[in-house]
Image (tube, rainbow, N blue to C red):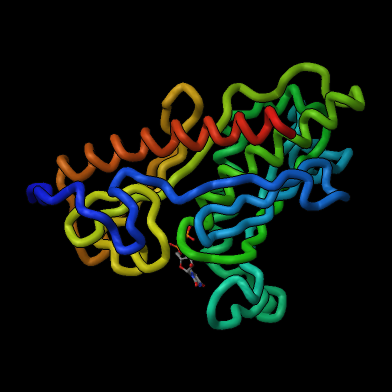
Length: 250
Ligand code: UDP
């Protein structure tokens, strides 16, 4: 499979193939949280909030594991989609997609945090989608890093955390092959028609934390994968800069 030649033609929403949607962070959106931000990523909006519990899970105590724990929960609010999405609690079960996404968020953050340096406490990261237009999991991870940084700052200010627990920042972006062309940061329309779907999570050193790429009733070539990774790195670099700017002005 070769790459199409009109690779500079505009996308449905006018973006270039290598262009992310506009991303901004509105920090301290949830005043009772230890750290929080509303990430507005095109028409996708996610509230990321962090709270801290001064205890560790039972399995850590039982296995005498030192340090703290970090875990994440993800949900789409009922009014985040065009048709009302029933709350999981009303169905008495967490849907498989939410479960997969919240585990991804937790893994992505734990990959850049030294749990020892958190001390014996549990950090809860809640990501609630206010408006969904594609890329809610990548917005959750990217926003959760900002919320967690704000929370860590607060804990440091209170003297509860002394050393910097971050090994690196983390950001995530979606990609896909749409109408034969690799593109960065899919909105819902692109996502629903994409031949290949990819989610990329990277740290500040440009190392992979998670790389998920799947053909949707389709396959992809080495050339596609290389181009997706090139675009992904471009996106991640911009997101890391936007996170730093949001934290510098917080
Ligand atoms: N979506 C939806 N209802 C759902 C699941 C997904 O409307 O129950 C939409 C939503 O816009 C979401 C997009 O489909 O952002 C893509 O979903 P996907 O599972 O690929 O996850 P995401 O791209 O949000 O990480």
